[in-house]
Image 1 (cartoon, rainbow, N blue to C red):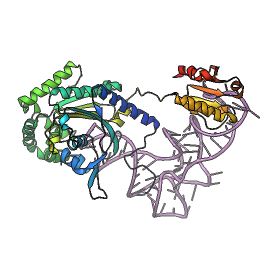
Image 2: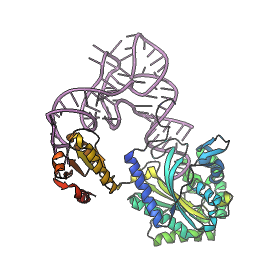
Image 3: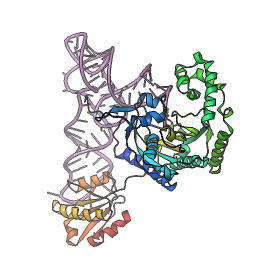
Image 4: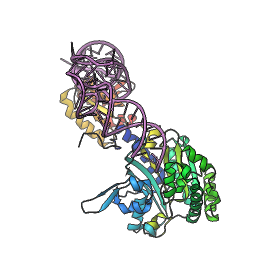
Length: 414
RNA sequence: GCGGGUGUAGCUCAGUCGGUUAGAGCGCUAGAUUGUGGAUCUAGAGGUCGUGGGUUCGAUUCCCAUCACUCGCCCCA
């Protein structure tokens, strides 16, 4: 160990930020619960094949971003770079397919060996949902509506734009792929270096290139809509009609392409202008081919994942931690008495801070710094009368309260 | 993985055209105030100037490397 820095791209999450993350997670969890999505947790690492076989051999995630290692038993395992593959694996190995449709919510850390940047980390956290076994466009609509509900709950829906596209069914997509390859091949040497390699790996991604020369070439590229067969077009029309019915605004973006191979039909991204290059905050789509590709029965799926760190940077309505009530024994002899009162009040559900040392002035300062709502000042004089002084730290008002009614009196601070 | 920027106290930053003990504000600790916080005043603690190497009589300052962060590309959440 060269030094005591955290590993590049990893971070400690201190109370303030953890509070923000928890707010994101809980808001998402509650919204998911209202839609009937139950929380699950899959392992943080899987056999590497789980990701290799599902994400596609050409995806950047598999080719250069996975944390893969051989464990002591000789198995090759990988820290999960995303959540969907693990859920699909669970569906198969757990024999859950007979209970379709299934609706799941998850949250947790993901790992990708990327160059860190604002809003991009090597260990980051996602929350996501998966709807399995629903082939109808209704599923896509529900999942997108749930995503919008989460952003709305966080108060950031107005900062986000929903971009929407269809990748069509397999036939439409491979037909379009052929057309694109044929078109771009004519300009092969004019394309940027990145796009030339994309032409081999994932030609659809060229459409999303930011390179100026690429964009000129892209202008006249074949449109996906011309390659969509009737089934794919109808499916997409049903999705947009459903979003219209729910008054969920979206912007069609024919250049929106997913990096992962298992997507088909609906692809969507909620993006924001406020996070620089890492503007995607919640994204997903339909992946009807995934479970089959992994070796299970053909199973439809739709879902999304959202980056907790990115959402945390945008959320403005994060609630404060519960404000405590401080107990302040005036003299050392009353420490134990104070502790007993703290013990009793805590068991009744109050948030109680007990200063460990210092005179009254010092303890009040500390109570103030902890943003305490009130302090219970426990002194010999009051105690003789079986009472304590309760001071409202916001107003400075204080009154003597009998110990028997202390809990009732404090209810006003809850 | 590629290109640019930045690293000085817990935080935000000055500063050193290379020269004794490196500064400010905020924060922190203590006191003024041995039963009353937020304000004020006083005092104090806290730095291997990111790390390693080079040049030099001398490096926090110049050079090289490296690490971390950051902006864009790439990728995506």
